[in-house]
Length: 274
Ligand code: MF3
Ligand code: CO
Ligand code: CO
Image (cartoon, rainbow, N blue to C red; front, side, top):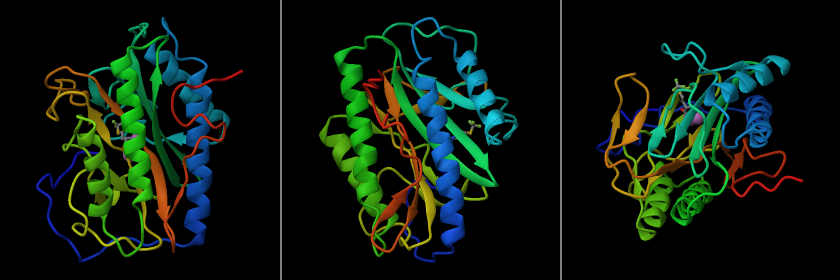
């Protein structure tokens, strides 16, 4: 989601929803179904496929599993997923243009199951990709992994952002500041905002029962983005490659539970399927 406090403020008011076991069970089910949809799409992402075909496959998958794509008719958005190719940072709109050998594409899907939102995204290589694209995907996945590892009750959202930013910048990549992770549950975008940069100890205190996404967008070039005239598509201003992975998590007594791990083990590329 767009980041309303791009200049990070210190907030300890903690007026953040805390959820119990029933919510965790609901989020587990929704998260696993959304991750299964991403698993299903692995076999379809190849040169020549259109992103609107991927969108249709996701819609049919949702219907077959009694789920609702959360993005359908969300603030005027009319598709079941977002497809963000190459220099598109996020919120790319599916369309009739075929994917090409060497593209990298993020597919971001949110499925509502029994009222709970499972929100997750992964990068998909289209055929053979360049070494620099491959490196970006590895850096971005590792940034997300380190962000998840930083979720500890008693620490703050700033610990998450700091871990992600430190790693990405060490790798000479930049972190997008205009979009952030978000609380979720029965609502799609809730408090807290999860910035993918920041300072350990700043932000919001992490407490068991918080539900949110971590979804860093990492650029090979500069961090600056702009939104195209369609009102959705965010691209890098320098047109360099951008990548993103997203998981939905719940804070536990000793860390967190990740709701959106791939049931098929297809966490990040290469997605070897036999
Ligand atoms: N799934 C996106 C997120 O991670 C939100 C997409 S909203 C849309 O928050 F309208 F662009 F689809
Ligand atoms: Co998402
Ligand atoms: Co999200």
